[in-house]
Image (cartoon, rainbow, N blue to C red; front, top):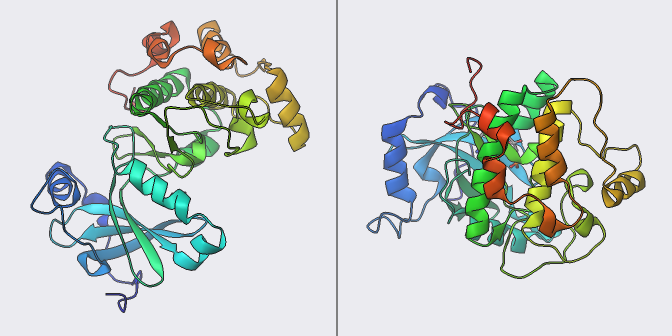
Length: 313
Ligand code: AMP
């Protein structure tokens, strides 16, 4: 292994239509820890047919790929070791692999496994057929209350699952959310997540989504993810994050003051605003617990119970 280059020019690799339940089981059995007989399986590039590029990331590219034996379609993330080393993020990647590979939730992108060669590290990821939520939000500018509530409910359930396992994501934002083939939301990118039961002090993430305790460099806990849920809910409904400002220093000040102002347009229900106000609370212990987010009237009255947003709904 190692000699075979990624051949993205290969013909006939329109895998997008190949995903489906039977293959899904196969791959999970083949690569998942569920199957003892294949537990020791070492993956290599030779096990995959490589298809079209899906996107470009900071440390490499993501390709559509199909595992040859099971025909299961995945997304193969290719990271260059030298770039990882230069940016000193090997530790972060190890943590991301360790955490994400152990999580099993319909709204969390599966990491089936990984392998490497001399120059690259490959992550075998669940394929999110409908791509980035960020692009969808850019295309639509804002989401309807039904769509926003469906996503927020899915996120709240996925975060509840993470927090039960003492995993804090810490970097929930539209760029880290993907959409599956049925329109279901998937949390991706656990690069900044931590497995912890204690309170943390590292500054990470993008300023707009950070809670007051993190921008101020104070200790933080799972409440950071609850705050980011409030930011996302606002952004889904109004098209921009609530504390956006031209200068970083002004965003910083607005976050610390919780300078929350609702634009007059689009017209949004009082129930949606109520939920946002209960999530964007300075004192992290006073933020609405995730269990109460899913039973909030706005969620109950608007979210699709299946967690799937389709244009028909
Ligand atoms: P990343 O390096 O994770 O930022 O990925 C770069 C881009 O590749 C993303 O912005 C997505 O457009 C695409 N991508 C990454 N992972 C997947 C996936 N599992 N399924 C579909 N597209 C993906």
